[in-house]
Amino acid sequence: MTMTSDDVTAILGPVDETLVAEVVATGATQAELSEAFAWANNDEALIGEGRRLPSGMVATLVDLLVSDEEDPE
Image (cartoon, rainbow, N blue to C red):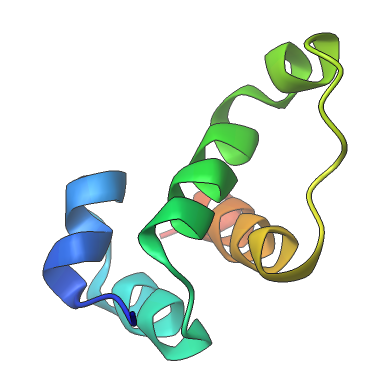
C-alpha cells in the first residue's frame, strides 16, 4: 500500500513538504521507509549487527533522506 503524507511524517517527524512528496512518489511502503530512516540515522550500528547494506527501494529512500540532511536550507 502506498503511503500518505501522514504516514511519512509519522515515521520521519516534521520534515519539508518536498521531501514528503518525493518519498510518497517512490511508492515505498512504511516498512521500507522505517528501515531507510534507521540506516540514514545509525548505519554504523546496523553494520555492526551484520546487516547487509540497503538495496533497492530502501537504498533509494536512504539517498533521499541523506540528501535532505545535507541541504543547506
